[in-house]
Length: 274
Ligand code: PMT
Image (cartoon, rainbow, N blue to C red; front, side):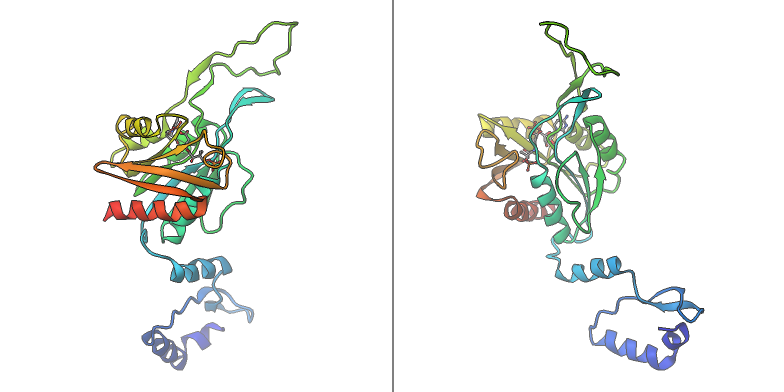
Protein backbone atom coordinates (compact mmCIF):
# COMPACT_ATOMS: atom_id res chain seq x y z
CA UNK A 1 0.00 0.00 0.00
CA UNK A 2 0.92 3.67 -0.23
CA UNK A 3 3.32 4.78 2.54
CA UNK A 4 0.84 7.33 3.96
CA UNK A 5 -1.90 4.67 4.18
CA UNK A 6 0.53 2.35 5.98
CA UNK A 7 1.60 5.09 8.40
CA UNK A 8 -2.01 6.08 9.17
CA UNK A 9 -2.99 5.61 12.84
CA UNK A 10 -6.00 3.45 12.01
CA UNK A 11 -3.91 1.06 9.87
CA UNK A 12 -1.27 0.86 12.57
CA UNK A 13 -3.74 0.19 15.39
CA UNK A 14 -5.36 -2.57 13.28
CA UNK A 15 -1.92 -4.12 12.64
CA UNK A 16 -1.12 -4.00 16.37
CA UNK A 17 -4.47 -5.68 17.11
CA UNK A 18 -3.66 -8.46 14.62
CA UNK A 19 -0.20 -8.97 16.17
CA UNK A 20 -1.75 -9.12 19.66
CA UNK A 21 -3.99 -11.93 18.34
CA UNK A 22 -0.85 -13.86 17.24
CA UNK A 23 -1.33 -13.15 13.54
CA UNK A 24 2.05 -13.21 11.79
CA UNK A 25 2.56 -9.95 9.88
CA UNK A 26 5.22 -10.12 7.17
CA UNK A 27 6.50 -6.79 5.94
CA UNK A 28 5.91 -4.37 4.45
CA UNK A 29 9.24 -3.32 3.02
CA UNK A 30 10.35 0.15 2.06
CA UNK A 31 11.06 1.41 -1.46
CA UNK A 32 9.65 3.09 -4.56
CA UNK A 33 5.84 2.91 -4.86
CA UNK A 34 3.59 2.77 -7.95
CA UNK A 35 2.29 6.31 -7.22
CA UNK A 36 5.85 7.67 -7.32
CA UNK A 37 6.25 8.07 -3.56
CA UNK A 38 8.92 6.27 -1.54
CA UNK A 39 8.45 4.58 1.83
CA UNK A 40 7.09 1.59 3.75
CA UNK A 41 4.20 -0.28 2.14
CA UNK A 42 5.65 -2.60 -0.46
CA UNK A 43 4.98 -6.33 -0.59
CA UNK A 44 8.00 -8.31 0.68
CA UNK A 45 10.11 -10.14 -1.86
CA UNK A 46 8.37 -13.47 -2.63
CA UNK A 47 11.43 -15.53 -1.62
CA UNK A 48 11.51 -13.76 1.72
CA UNK A 49 7.81 -14.53 2.24
CA UNK A 50 8.48 -18.19 1.44
CA UNK A 51 11.46 -18.30 3.83
CA UNK A 52 9.58 -16.60 6.69
CA UNK A 53 6.43 -18.69 6.16
CA UNK A 54 8.33 -21.97 5.95
CA UNK A 55 9.82 -21.26 9.39
CA UNK A 56 6.27 -21.78 10.73
CA UNK A 57 6.48 -25.44 9.68
CA UNK A 58 10.05 -25.98 10.88
CA UNK A 59 10.51 -28.81 13.38
CA UNK A 60 12.82 -26.45 15.24
CA UNK A 61 15.41 -28.83 16.77
CA UNK A 62 18.21 -26.87 15.08
CA UNK A 63 16.60 -23.47 15.15
CA UNK A 64 19.23 -20.70 15.25
CA UNK A 65 22.07 -23.09 14.34
CA UNK A 66 24.44 -22.64 11.41
CA UNK A 67 25.16 -25.92 9.65
CA UNK A 68 27.79 -26.57 6.99
CA UNK A 69 27.49 -29.74 4.91
CA UNK A 70 29.66 -31.17 2.13
CA UNK A 71 28.15 -33.47 -0.51
CA UNK A 72 28.89 -35.28 -3.73
CA UNK A 73 32.17 -36.36 -5.27
CA UNK A 74 35.25 -34.32 -6.04
CA UNK A 75 37.03 -34.39 -9.41
CA UNK A 76 40.80 -34.38 -9.57
CA UNK A 77 42.00 -33.30 -13.01
CA UNK A 78 44.64 -35.37 -14.82
CA UNK A 79 44.62 -33.34 -18.04
CA UNK A 80 41.99 -31.09 -19.76
CA UNK A 81 39.74 -34.09 -20.56
CA UNK A 82 40.31 -36.64 -17.77
CA UNK A 83 39.84 -36.76 -14.03
CA UNK A 84 39.80 -39.10 -11.02
CA UNK A 85 36.46 -39.26 -9.18
CA UNK A 86 33.97 -41.68 -7.58
CA UNK A 87 30.30 -42.73 -7.71
CA UNK A 88 28.83 -40.32 -5.15
CA UNK A 89 25.54 -38.88 -6.46
CA UNK A 90 25.23 -36.24 -3.72
CA UNK A 91 21.82 -37.62 -2.64
CA UNK A 92 22.78 -38.34 0.98
CA UNK A 93 24.40 -34.93 1.48
CA UNK A 94 21.53 -33.02 -0.15
CA UNK A 95 18.96 -34.98 1.91
CA UNK A 96 20.82 -34.08 5.11
CA UNK A 97 21.01 -30.44 4.08
CA UNK A 98 17.22 -30.37 3.53
CA UNK A 99 16.54 -32.18 6.84
CA UNK A 100 18.76 -29.68 8.70
CA UNK A 101 17.04 -26.74 7.00
CA UNK A 102 13.60 -28.16 7.86
CA UNK A 103 14.80 -28.48 11.46
CA UNK A 104 15.27 -24.70 11.46
CA UNK A 105 19.00 -24.40 10.71
CA UNK A 106 20.68 -21.96 8.35
CA UNK A 107 22.40 -24.35 5.97
CA UNK A 108 25.35 -23.93 3.65
CA UNK A 109 25.82 -26.86 1.27
CA UNK A 110 29.21 -27.20 -0.41
CA UNK A 111 28.80 -29.60 -3.27
CA UNK A 112 31.01 -31.37 -5.77
CA UNK A 113 29.58 -31.96 -9.28
CA UNK A 114 26.15 -33.70 -9.13
CA UNK A 115 23.02 -33.99 -11.29
CA UNK A 116 20.79 -32.73 -8.43
CA UNK A 117 18.71 -29.54 -8.48
CA UNK A 118 19.84 -26.83 -6.06
CA UNK A 119 17.63 -27.21 -2.96
CA UNK A 120 15.40 -24.26 -2.00
CA UNK A 121 16.28 -22.16 1.02
CA UNK A 122 19.83 -23.51 1.25
CA UNK A 123 22.98 -21.60 0.25
CA UNK A 124 24.70 -23.78 -2.32
CA UNK A 125 28.39 -23.41 -3.14
CA UNK A 126 29.54 -25.47 -6.13
CA UNK A 127 33.10 -26.78 -6.16
CA UNK A 128 35.04 -29.26 -8.26
CA UNK A 129 38.21 -30.54 -6.60
CA UNK A 130 39.08 -31.53 -3.03
CA UNK A 131 41.24 -28.45 -2.72
CA UNK A 132 38.35 -26.21 -3.90
CA UNK A 133 36.08 -27.91 -1.35
CA UNK A 134 38.65 -27.53 1.44
CA UNK A 135 39.01 -23.81 0.70
CA UNK A 136 35.22 -23.25 0.52
CA UNK A 137 34.69 -25.10 3.82
CA UNK A 138 37.44 -23.28 5.71
CA UNK A 139 36.25 -19.87 4.51
CA UNK A 140 32.68 -20.60 5.72
CA UNK A 141 33.41 -22.43 8.98
CA UNK A 142 33.40 -19.35 11.22
CA UNK A 143 30.42 -19.26 13.62
CA UNK A 144 29.36 -22.67 12.37
CA UNK A 145 27.67 -24.86 15.01
CA UNK A 146 27.62 -28.15 13.13
CA UNK A 147 29.72 -29.55 10.28
CA UNK A 148 28.69 -32.74 8.45
CA UNK A 149 31.20 -34.19 5.98
CA UNK A 150 29.14 -36.31 3.60
CA UNK A 151 31.22 -35.67 0.48
CA UNK A 152 33.22 -38.50 -1.01
CA UNK A 153 36.38 -36.43 -1.17
CA UNK A 154 39.12 -37.93 -3.34
CA UNK A 155 41.95 -38.89 -1.00
CA UNK A 156 44.49 -38.37 -3.79
CA UNK A 157 45.00 -36.09 -6.79
CA UNK A 158 47.48 -36.36 -9.66
CA UNK A 159 50.74 -34.75 -8.54
CA UNK A 160 51.08 -32.96 -11.88
CA UNK A 161 48.32 -31.52 -14.05
CA UNK A 162 49.20 -31.98 -17.74
CA UNK A 163 48.21 -28.86 -19.71
CA UNK A 164 47.59 -30.76 -22.99
CA UNK A 165 45.66 -34.00 -23.49
CA UNK A 166 47.98 -36.93 -22.72
CA UNK A 167 48.55 -38.91 -25.94
CA UNK A 168 48.78 -42.69 -26.28
CA UNK A 169 52.24 -43.85 -27.31
CA UNK A 170 52.08 -47.40 -28.64
CA UNK A 171 51.58 -49.89 -25.84
CA UNK A 172 53.28 -47.77 -23.17
CA UNK A 173 51.53 -47.64 -19.84
CA UNK A 174 50.87 -44.16 -18.50
CA UNK A 175 51.83 -43.73 -14.85
CA UNK A 176 50.04 -41.15 -12.77
CA UNK A 177 51.82 -40.07 -9.63
CA UNK A 178 49.43 -39.19 -6.82
CA UNK A 179 49.58 -36.69 -3.97
CA UNK A 180 47.47 -36.75 -0.80
CA UNK A 181 44.61 -34.21 -0.67
CA UNK A 182 43.88 -32.16 2.46
CA UNK A 183 41.56 -33.95 4.90
CA UNK A 184 38.60 -31.55 5.14
CA UNK A 185 36.74 -33.06 8.08
CA UNK A 186 39.98 -33.36 10.07
CA UNK A 187 40.80 -29.68 9.35
CA UNK A 188 37.35 -28.68 10.64
CA UNK A 189 37.74 -30.88 13.73
CA UNK A 190 40.98 -29.05 14.55
CA UNK A 191 39.52 -25.56 14.03
CA UNK A 192 39.17 -23.30 17.05
CA UNK A 193 36.39 -23.03 18.07
CA UNK A 194 35.46 -26.47 16.80
CA UNK A 195 31.91 -27.01 15.53
CA UNK A 196 30.14 -30.27 16.39
CA UNK A 197 31.91 -32.31 13.74
CA UNK A 198 30.27 -35.28 12.04
CA UNK A 199 32.05 -37.49 9.53
CA UNK A 200 30.90 -40.41 7.42
CA UNK A 201 32.79 -43.68 7.05
CA UNK A 202 32.29 -45.39 3.69
CA UNK A 203 33.57 -48.93 4.29
CA UNK A 204 33.43 -52.27 2.49
CA UNK A 205 34.51 -54.43 5.47
CA UNK A 206 35.04 -54.19 9.27
CA UNK A 207 32.49 -51.35 9.30
CA UNK A 208 32.32 -50.76 13.06
CA UNK A 209 36.05 -51.07 13.70
CA UNK A 210 37.09 -48.71 10.89
CA UNK A 211 34.34 -46.21 11.72
CA UNK A 212 35.37 -46.06 15.39
CA UNK A 213 38.98 -45.60 14.29
CA UNK A 214 37.90 -42.60 12.17
CA UNK A 215 35.98 -41.14 15.12
CA UNK A 216 39.18 -41.02 17.16
CA UNK A 217 41.79 -40.39 14.44
CA UNK A 218 39.89 -37.48 12.87
CA UNK A 219 38.81 -36.05 16.25
CA UNK A 220 35.10 -36.33 15.29
CA UNK A 221 32.13 -35.91 17.61
CA UNK A 222 30.08 -38.42 15.63
CA UNK A 223 30.74 -40.85 12.79
CA UNK A 224 28.13 -42.36 10.47
CA UNK A 225 29.17 -45.69 9.01
CA UNK A 226 27.65 -47.06 5.81
CA UNK A 227 28.53 -50.29 4.03
CA UNK A 228 29.31 -49.22 0.47
CA UNK A 229 29.82 -52.82 -0.70
CA UNK A 230 26.02 -53.25 -0.57
CA UNK A 231 24.55 -51.85 -3.84
CA UNK A 232 21.20 -51.08 -2.13
CA UNK A 233 22.86 -48.44 0.07
CA UNK A 234 25.74 -45.98 0.03
CA UNK A 235 26.99 -44.66 -3.31
CA UNK A 236 24.41 -43.61 -5.92
CA UNK A 237 21.44 -45.41 -4.27
CA UNK A 238 18.07 -44.10 -3.08
CA UNK A 239 18.39 -45.74 0.36
CA UNK A 240 20.90 -46.04 3.14
CA UNK A 241 21.44 -47.96 6.38
CA UNK A 242 23.92 -46.75 8.95
CA UNK A 243 25.48 -47.37 12.32
CA UNK A 244 26.27 -44.16 14.13
CA UNK A 245 28.93 -43.87 16.82
CA UNK A 246 29.77 -41.11 19.29
CA UNK A 247 31.73 -41.18 22.53
CA UNK A 248 29.81 -43.47 24.84
CA UNK A 249 26.96 -44.28 22.47
CA UNK A 250 25.77 -45.76 19.21
CA UNK A 251 22.59 -46.07 17.17
CA UNK A 252 21.65 -48.40 14.34
CA UNK A 253 19.42 -46.98 11.59
CA UNK A 254 18.14 -49.82 9.36
CA UNK A 255 17.43 -49.62 5.61
CA UNK A 256 15.26 -46.61 4.68
CA UNK A 257 15.29 -43.75 2.18
CA UNK A 258 18.10 -41.20 2.37
CA UNK A 259 15.45 -38.58 3.21
CA UNK A 260 14.08 -40.59 6.15
CA UNK A 261 17.50 -41.51 7.50
CA UNK A 262 18.56 -37.85 7.30
CA UNK A 263 15.71 -36.74 9.58
CA UNK A 264 16.78 -39.38 12.12
CA UNK A 265 20.45 -38.36 11.87
CA UNK A 266 19.53 -34.70 12.42
CA UNK A 267 17.47 -35.70 15.49
CA UNK A 268 20.46 -37.63 16.89
CA UNK A 269 22.78 -34.66 16.31
CA UNK A 270 20.28 -32.28 17.98
CA UNK A 271 20.11 -34.68 20.98
CA UNK A 272 23.90 -34.53 21.33
CA UNK A 273 23.86 -30.72 21.33
CA UNK A 274 21.39 -30.49 24.24
O1 PMT B 1 26.34 -39.25 -2.59
P1 PMT B 1 25.57 -40.55 -2.48
O2 PMT B 1 25.50 -41.27 -3.80
O3 PMT B 1 24.22 -40.35 -1.84
O4 PMT B 1 26.41 -41.53 -1.52
C1 PMT B 1 26.53 -41.24 -0.16
C2 PMT B 1 27.95 -41.57 0.36
C3 PMT B 1 28.20 -43.07 0.23
C4 PMT B 1 29.01 -40.81 -0.44
C5 PMT B 1 27.97 -41.11 1.86
O5 PMT B 1 26.99 -41.79 2.58
C6 PMT B 1 29.35 -41.36 2.49
O6 PMT B 1 29.68 -42.42 2.98
N1 PMT B 1 30.20 -40.30 2.47
C7 PMT B 1 31.61 -40.36 2.89
C8 PMT B 1 32.45 -40.87 1.74
C9 PMT B 1 33.91 -40.97 2.12
O7 PMT B 1 34.73 -40.34 1.49
O8 PMT B 1 34.17 -41.72 3.16
P2 PMT B 1 35.64 -41.97 3.79
O9 PMT B 1 35.45 -43.07 4.76
O10 PMT B 1 36.65 -42.15 2.70
O11 PMT B 1 35.98 -40.62 4.52
C10 PMT B 1 35.71 -40.41 5.90
C11 PMT B 1 35.29 -38.98 6.16
O12 PMT B 1 36.37 -38.10 5.84
C12 PMT B 1 34.09 -38.49 5.37
O13 PMT B 1 33.30 -37.69 6.22
C13 PMT B 1 34.71 -37.66 4.24
O14 PMT B 1 33.84 -36.62 3.81
C14 PMT B 1 35.93 -37.10 4.95
N2 PMT B 1 37.09 -36.79 4.08
C15 PMT B 1 37.75 -37.76 3.38
C16 PMT B 1 38.86 -37.45 2.66
C17 PMT B 1 39.30 -36.10 2.61
N3 PMT B 1 40.37 -35.74 1.91
N4 PMT B 1 38.63 -35.15 3.29
C18 PMT B 1 37.54 -35.48 4.01
O15 PMT B 1 36.91 -34.59 4.64
